[in-house]
Length: 485
Image 1 (cartoon, rainbow, N blue to C red):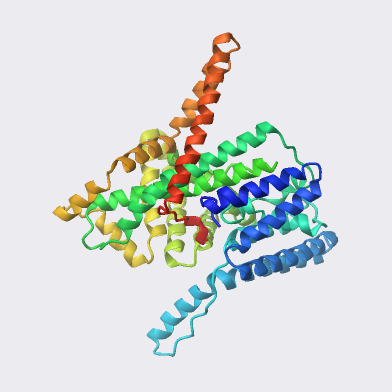
Image 2 (tube, rainbow, N blue to C red):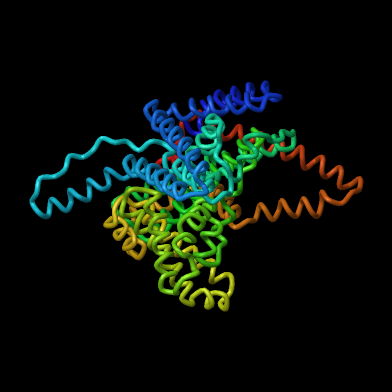
């Protein structure tokens, strides 16, 4: 079930909210109701997936208790190792078995040896995210940042809460464990949650889906005949699609959390205005970047070791970042591509960027990121190389020229203008200007303007919901990129 689906918007969410607030004076009752609805949400993609999730929860509940009771002796570390190994084993079996078998068969083919039968394992929805939730839970217990949860139902809610189960943000137990026991519910928090959810819904349906159609058309076309104009347009559209798709989902997740009293950390901070690849990863998928920093990069030495080892640590982290995203060589190379530029910047290029100035820095970063997105979108390394070649194919056929201009209908033009302004922070700047320059002063004029602004905001969010509903009911193209991870 997707957030951007009529069944979720007009059935699942209203019913969940209704019964949740009927239990407003019963904290445990609210948590159990949220857990129940989360399991239904998860089971919508397949009941067998839910059994894997339940097994994962049970195992991590037991591992957490064992780590907690053995913190003062070496058994604590052994139980931590067992817990981490089990979680990674589950992830490896269900996410990477087919990838391993495929590569073994490639090797066996060269050696003229009979191939290994391909497994029929299907990737469970959300396994990458709930595995990371479990890992952070166990590690934080061992590090004494939190205590083991003795109520298995509360732990289950943390691991599989539907608002962020499918695609994050990655929530750490140490950040929300107090909220599981007690959290505040106010009209201000609830209304903000609705606004944030609708902003995310608009990003997904009205922007990402528009760019998705163009990107899909370009990337699945004949790459040998693809012109530079269409190749660059496809690359730009995919860059905007994945940003508005994923940041939109994160906005919806954060908004849903607020509706139920939870406060989740931000996951995006205008990554396309980053002035270096390092800066990009401080702004893009923040919860994932901080997870790898705290649970991988720092434990293997970070930058507290020899310079050469620091570079190796960066490469290891970005190799794992790419491999986490998907069982494919394109994802691995995508991660290493970013890791290469992280090392280049650390070698001294970052100092050069500081001297050059902001416009050049943003252009440099965007080019690196967009060229990397081609790897992310392509099915094979070979198709990636063909696409890169097409980016510099300046032979324009009449068919390719007509195709290029056909993309620029009114809907696409409006979406492109809004997306570019939004990605570079224009609307946030406008909002801050209105809030600080018009609404803050306490006088009769500002009160009138404030009232007008709030009325306009209500109409705006209502319009977003109406337009999104129209698009979804019409059955328009509605993919979700991070659903596959």
